[in-house]
Image (cartoon, rainbow, N blue to C red; front, side, top):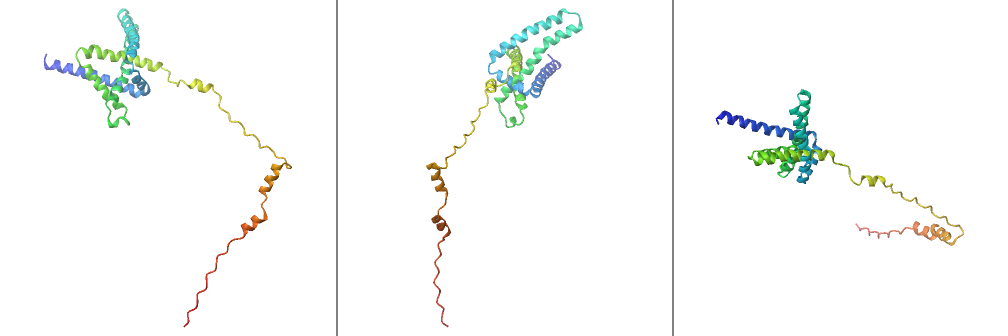
Length: 225
């Protein structure tokens, strides 16, 4: 193998890594909420992978069967789209895996620039793809299949809170109206006592009007000249 072949393989691998990064960044830029939900789906990786297998394998097989058997170019194009659609959805959904990896490697600018988590986690995942056999046959297909499962479950998930139906069915609580004060009979002993307590007496007026006088200071004796 000469230098030209090595350089061609290097550029091919680098181009594939950049394409993966582009899909992950496009997904995080256009669907930030969906990518955040896909990141949560990776907390249950087995279930997400099984859902991805159910979606990817039949559509992939169906698309390439239509592509191989039909001679009509329009039908071939439709078969290619059917076979490639789950792969593209898997690349976009695997941005949640990149975000999860990047979140485990925090940096000071992550709060203001969330795309850095996807960028950093994407490069880590890209270098994991380079491992011979394990990276090519296990990690790369698993990330695409699980990414498709994460994408579909995030789109079909119900984001509404569970208690919304209960809270809407309940009627608002009404506060009871204050009861009017009971009127007292003028001739009752209670009303007479209240009237007496409200009428000021003459002693109270005198006490309020009389003020204590300040004592006068004694006059100083004049000095004889």
